[in-house]
Length: 414
Length: 123
Image (cartoon, rainbow over all chains, first blue to last red; front, side):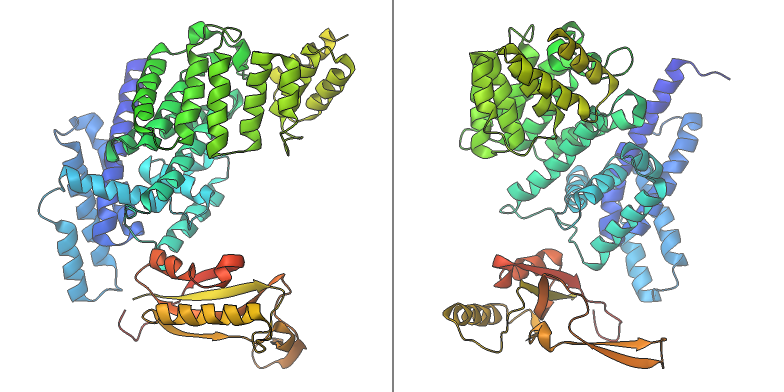
């Protein structure tokens, strides 16, 4: 029987609800049982039951309480089956898991923060951090995490198992960092969320919806982080940055699913609501970051300049150049310098852009650099050099649409 | 409480048995200071002679086979194991905080590894 779109939406909303609440139940259960694997097995079971029953019997009035009770019952079953523990230890553990009431909001909040910081602990590789965050906080299955990060399910299962084993045997503490460690650890968490977003954002059309689902997972995690750490400037900055980039999604791919460059996007298709949300978050972040500029906030400010411009040509380039100058003071990287050089090229003309580009090192094999340089050379009338640069750009791996654009530019030069 | 081995790796295979330069003297003083500060968590440790004094032992053909010895370390690497501490810490974060105070961490690196508890003692 064919399902109506309503049914699919309903199902998606249900899955979302179960996963969100499941992550919260998991966070508490990891703490009370002290065993990641046990907690995960128990919550997995509760989630399966919910997905099986709720569509039939209706969503219970308190979904989280339902999931908590079901997962706890399962956890106790699993503990009883474990032959390793002696009876006294078992009884104590059961008592801790059974805990009279479902935990209140504050406890759940603290447990989720713990889970988040463990997933993004710097003793784990960034790949492991991303996978763990998607698996435990996003509630994705191992197979879904595998296909969204482009690795085989077997590799992903191994990666997750290895990470969880390290957490257990090396005793990565199930704790949120102390206030003095918070800023640094938070940067790690934000970086993982940002990388998750860009993975999905730059996935091209053929990669399937799961790849692009990474952007919504990242936005969800940023929203969660905003709830958990209200008023944190970097968190607001990241949330703003993601919203302002995500707003361009409807115009980012052409009919064939190939990416369209910012300069050529149909701006009427941008998501105005997302832009408004991003701007509001950016406002809050800017008000909070007076002492020291925050890289995410500054990047969000640059994204906002683009989102507010009616056309590429009418962009507020002076503002963008000064934001890049600020960005250089907190993180001087070749990619930042490249962005600044492109903005200078728009503001002061191609020759100034080329001069700025001379300070960029190590991006010779990076398409935006090579293509950006080619364009500045062409605009500056240095035709022979521009031709060479376009040819060099065409040598680099990229998608069909970008290749067509580059070839067309090369043609125009005659 | 879990125990961690803090394995000290250094470039250039230094000989810590000869304290013949002011730098080494200073370094030894720094290690002494670490030993005093970290006394509460240290459960053991040793400084090792250079890998030129190392002998690698293998038994060909498995258990009961021929003992074959060869001159030199198990693996030739740029950075060599020059010593280690055994530390007892509440968790990895604490172990990392201590490891960061071991002088070799400032110019080379410390590998922190959890120690397997085979039971028998109170954990």
